[in-house]
Length: 360
Image 1 (cartoon, rainbow, N blue to C red):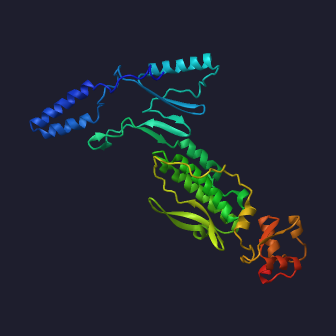
Image 2 (image 1 turned 90 degrees about the horizontal axis):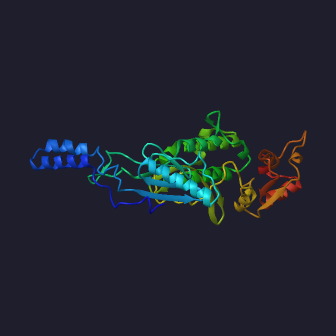
């Protein structure tokens, strides 16, 4: 199809445009700069090439798996002819049927084509002038669809407002922040090619509020206190940016850092995904490994002889009529049958004579 529907080197010049340009040149020669200025403004509202030039056609296409987008410069009648030929080829040669609902013909300037989660349009702005020429007209533009932002916000909303995620409350702070951070990075990195990537600010605010509410519910605190506790600033190519960090310090090694935010929402033509996207709401159940890598007692914060204390059932932690030691209350509150402790705390738990840190 491409050889058949591609012809001509450049568009022929529009006749009306050529007449106005000649009038502008004559006004310049005779020194009538006011008239020349007005004619130049008129030229910038007119197409320089003939939109109906029958000797100029272009056909291009891009495919990803079974999702295909064709770009055609020409009349709608020929676009419908291309669609009919594609339909016949797929039916007769490959025994496939085009989806009538998904196979659409759209005008690139007045409508948007959906492709791989983006809206594809062609820009037109006579006022965008670079080096004396209109630089935006005819440029293909990628945009973040409003429907995508709405769909991405849904998991973090309840009755139209940002809400915490109860299923994450029993995870440690590092895992919670890392989960939100991975989801946010995946979305932003995918849409950094869009010219309107700044529209993700609203989604970022919703996810940030949901994160802080989840942490506040976990620690029985407030959103403001959690924001102050985990606030951080990082350096980026576009200057410092605020974010939220959860750190796990490790003796003799770099700390484990989970981060949410801190990504400048500016278009990047060379953007590439550098972080795997987690499915929203899905946690990789490797929390114990992370806790062990922290090499820190979860009771006294020491790092000597780290081991794991186990109980068979959470119900065993509850002893009616008897005060609960701090380690049992901690396990019951986290709803975890494991507790990472140092050698001293582990011995104290098993001897039934906990030191002061275990009982206070």
